[in-house]
Length: 419
Ligand SMILES: *Cc1c(COP(=O)(O)O)cnc(C)c1O
Ligand SMILES: [Zn+2]
Image 1 (cartoon, rainbow, N blue to C red):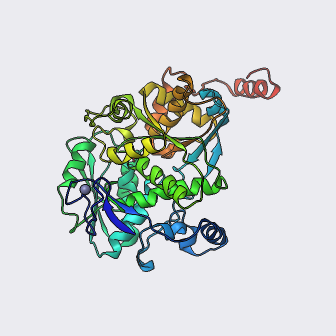
Image 2 (tube, rainbow, N blue to C red; image 1 turned 120 degrees about the vertical axis):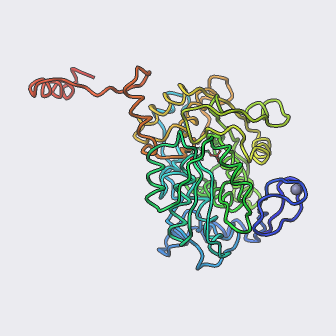
Image 3 (cartoon, rainbow, N blue to C red; image 1 turned 180 degrees about the vertical axis):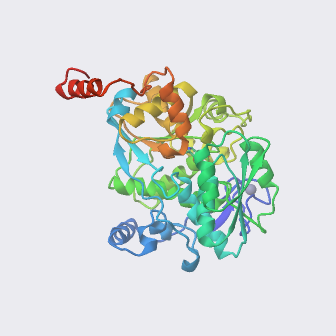
């Protein structure tokens, strides 16, 4: 695979992050010569294999990834993400055929693992000692876990305020050096971007190895659907690395002949952190904003991958939209009622589906996949606060009184007297 500028196409040097000619982000060009039939049978074979590398939902697609020495591959069996039907969510959005691709079901409980396994394996292969990232929490946790397994020192820069306690705790458990920054994610990332990528492994999503890993979520989704393409893929957008990764994955699947069309990408941002929406709707350059939202994983005002993501959204005849924090909160509670659960940022996908349906962009019988990016236990403080509030779907804990009253209450539920 060749590394080249995603904008001016100039070839790029290994272990750099930005184009020397124009400053654009780099991307790998997939040049496998395998046929679709060969790939499908290879993948079917690997399903039966217990080899570590074959059970990973990233490395099972290794012919479509940058090649790395096997001994450097650091995997935690990531990206084996379940696809669930979404009946409560579908009724809420007014669509008949919604499903959830739950990327929160990953070793560190977010989709970041799919990219991190490749970025850290590459860092190990090139002999890096230190891996660095800026993070709102999930990138930090993923990097820390993979770095621990690869024997690398992990250094994370996180905003001093607004990172969920669970994300910080798991990052500390995995042994990372955590540096709190007096600023937000955008400022933390700006600091990381001044570091020398040849001396330390910078593993934010500006790192093209991250995107290669994350693109396999598209393959994994398609494979679970027997290569039937959904009409829409609806996902939350923050730094927009994941949008560019899904777009790249679907495009490559199309080029390889694994599928015959692209799903349309719908990127959903939180209203207080939605600089991508006007670019998709009216063109022009992205204007950075000061991000404000309780969905901290998408609290990003200057998304690094906006140009790549814009290309993917355009190629797929997709769209971008903004939803309020209240809509995100309600949608998250609804996803819980499907027995699935996710962190706040993930629920932007369902809030977005509802809005797209109301705007008539999404047909009532459209086949749409909602990407759930992180696990419900990533932000329990948020969930607890929601259920204590007077929000639409708040589920208040009951205090009923005597043992006899409790027994009566349960008996009434059992007999159908109470709903
Ligand atoms: C990182 C993250 C996002 C945003 O993904 P981008 O690639 O930054 O657009 C959304 N949800 C969760 C849970 C995340 O961890
Ligand atoms: Zn360039």
